[in-house]
Length: 384
Image (cartoon, rainbow, N blue to C red; front, top):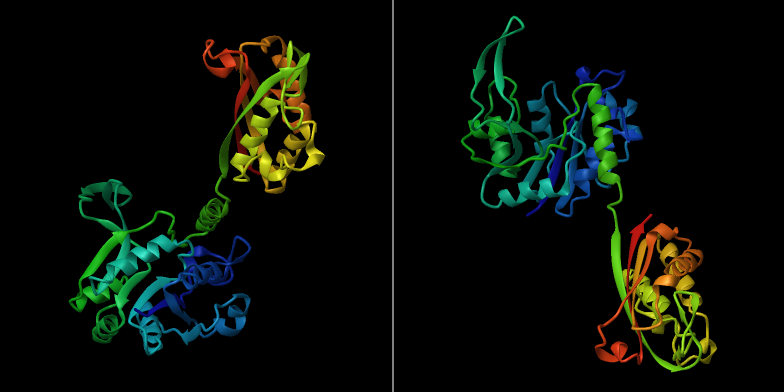
């Protein structure tokens, strides 16, 4: 399959207003035609572009449009039919399928183009359309004169795809009045044309207000998809002789201390690992190996600050932190507010986005036997 995009841009588009043809008017900072060309030329299956233009526009307007490399320029005719025939005559010799597209539809998606090309595998023609869902009236003298059954009615769109030789023959045989589109020409020649699902965003610029609508669609499509990630962390430290533990940055009196390479802040370690997890950056051990003596007895806030800074460097803000400490003693509740304040100071996150709570294991397991403390944490990061 060798696919060529044939873009018809020779019309005047007077209904759109303005001092120049609509295809050269500005849309989102560049000529409308530039968007259309880019949408088709960027499709991986489109190997060539034929652009049919009005002869007068070559010197006056076309110079402002960034043409894809290798674009074949063709002068259009007096009617759309004539312009399409001129474009078909200029197709590359190896072209087997052609996508005929109106320059005034700058918002076509790659998925829509793909649907047309897939349908061409089994049909000589294929075109996108959207089913009519509104009630249809017939009008006379400004009054409703009747209704029209909408069953089986579709709103036609482009690109309309055809096997190259078949649509060439159809246009050569066409002798009627100017055709509504290339599907009409194809069907008059006996070609079957498959309908594929169109796209409401595939707007045809016709009136002045359509430019604002198209700009809004482009802005929406161009917006970066929201990137939200969640990570979890789990850590355990055993007790050893001592008189306090450090939990989430707060020194809490206790009859034992926590054993660890650093200050053994089990809560902060779990939170740090949750942030690393959300970033797919491993765990504390990857960034601060316990085999490295420089981290012996280090304050765990060093690790947490590193994780927060890494998130910022990757373009993420931390949305919330939730940490649960699992132990029989010491009692965490009286210190939870201070822990959240301490974590807020280290991370720069408002306290209302940080939760520290505790639970017991109902005297089960090593935490139930008061042999140590476990912590589990969850963190969500959002791309800024």
